[in-house]
Length: 321
Ligand SMILES: NC(=O)c1ccc[n+]([C@@H]2O[C@H](COP(=O)([O-])OP(=O)(O)OC[C@H]3O[C@@H](n4cnc5c(N)ncnc54)[C@H](OP(=O)(O)O)[C@@H]3O)[C@@H](O)[C@H]2O)c1
Image 1 (cartoon, helix red, strand yellow):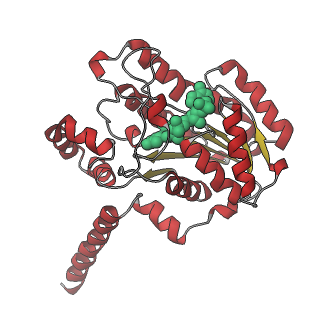
Image 2: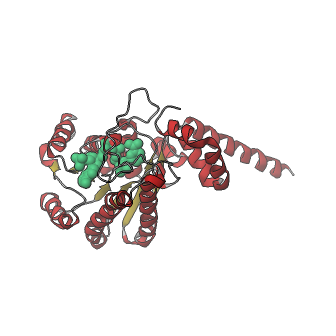
Image 3: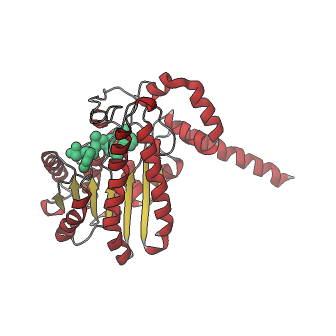
């Protein structure tokens, strides 16, 4: 019976360590272990990384992180002057040079421009090693008041544009038997984020689409990473969709709110990329704990969220709890 005793002790110890890491951590346990013992972002040196939404927030800070790692970068978004500012900041790190950064203004909603844009990146760098589909907008709106046109705009930006750009770049990666697609999903791609119904739907769709692609291309040299951040400091509240078609929320985040810093988010994203992890969760608590609860006890998580009510959920999301 001795071995049974030790099996029980080891099992209990394993769960205690896991719960400790979840309650004190800011990312899932696997990613945490990779930050300690995995490859560092330096392994990405020389890789050509095309980042959409690089003019602000997570995409901007990920650009800094990858510039430090010595990547060759193509920075895309609509606002050219903001991209130039990000480029300048990348150069200040001293770890990259002018010829390693291409500023490529792109409205991802203009699907017909994707092929030409890809051509521009290839003309400059020869190929795209890593595509980071990061451009996106969030939402604050009650489900029943949301105009169907908002749902459609959300899907076009956060899903269809991502599919289109990926379909543009993927064939060349498959030909080379080498490539990496990285999607900026969200915690809302894993669990429902009440008062962001269209956003939740879009990020869940992204997860579904790319969970299939990951397996289909697994033996053909292409990896797919889904990054699921919780609340992170950025400008996302300013451009978030509302319930009304064509409207932007115009909100702002306040310092002191309980959100992950953009720098930390970018650091974790870079580790996930360096180690080609399939899916990573980045969030402070209580959101991280709730993600695990939902993963392993989905029925309990549904009961808890209904009991918590909208006010508490709203406070957690806005970094006030
Ligand atoms: N911040 C969070 O709490 C959080 C949490 C989970 C997931 N995310 C995800 O992280 C990603 C980045 O968001 P963020 O928080 O960093 O927000 P952000 O600061 O508002 O950045 C959004 C980026 O997307 C670009 N963009 C928007 N519409 C575009 C278009 N039509 N064409 C090209 N680029 C476009 C913006 O650039 P231009 O305006 O210059 O075009 C900007 O660079 C999004 O996919 C978001 O869903 C964010």
